[in-house]
Amino acid sequence: MYPSLTPPRQVKIGDAAAFAGTTPRAIRHYHAIGLLPEPERGGDGRRRYGYDDMIRLLWIRRMADAGISLDDMRAAFGEARDESGDEASDQAPGIESVLGRLEASLAAQEAAVRRRRAAVQRLRAVGSPLGLLSELVTDRLSPLPPGALRPSDLDALLVTERICGPLGAAIQASAFIVLATHPDLRAEDDRLEAAEAALDDGVAPDDPRVEALAVQRCAHQMALDQAIEAAGLEAAEAKILETYDAGLTGEEGREMSAATALTKMPYDFSPARMRCLELAGRLFGEALADAHPADGS
Image (tube, rainbow, N blue to C red; front, side, top):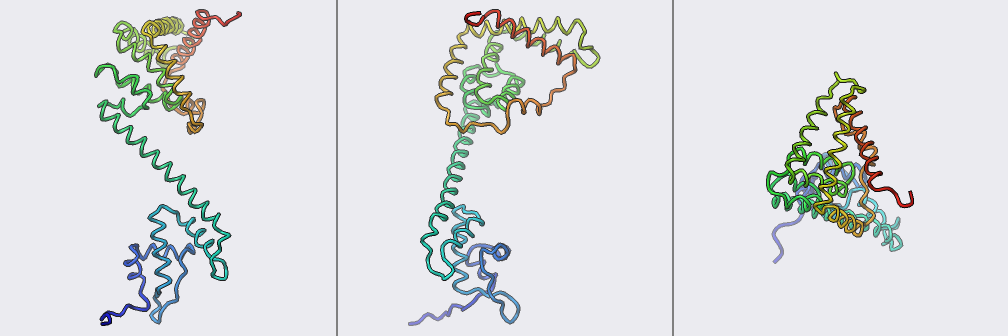
């Protein structure tokens, strides 16, 4: 027996969209960008879609599901057939290029998903915002007991990661390990922080308190370094550097340089406080040079 239903020779845009699993608006867009040839209109002024139109539309939908962009679809369709309508095998490299770019894009997306899953897993395991930092930093700090790190510690590490990358933050983590395990050093750090915060806009940069506080900050930093060395954290830093260098792929570039990033991170510090920090940094550098003179000097 023959089927009782006779398929239509042509269908309207709404029916074509429903069959292909898309929308009339999407089909009109395909027409506008030249991806789907616009069919002739019927006596009522509406487009009518035939078999060839529907086949093209179905292939468009399959390619979209595969993640191929509309621009790449146009290239693929244009290269698939030559002007005579015959298969153009000499155009295959162009299509291969499209697929190669798509595969590279999908690989990048898969890598991004893996990184996100790892971050979520770290966050669940750690149970604090520490898990949102890089694996290098999380691994260094996760042995600390809950509450040992302050929110301001994590804030500082977050900024360092943005400016210097995960390696820089992993090295900086040594200072926070020492502060978390040495109450006397933490208390002195808090005292210095409060004194530096008091250097507001009402304090002149050449005020004697500025230089005195810079000397104290330098001494405190030297004490932190000694505690880091005594705890064997320098050896851990060296191992991190070795492991990190061995795992480099050449694709770890940040979106901006450290120098550029520093100019975009706002700190509402007065001129006096800025001079204090700069002076403390210079004094610390000189102290390190004296403690570890270069060979042959």
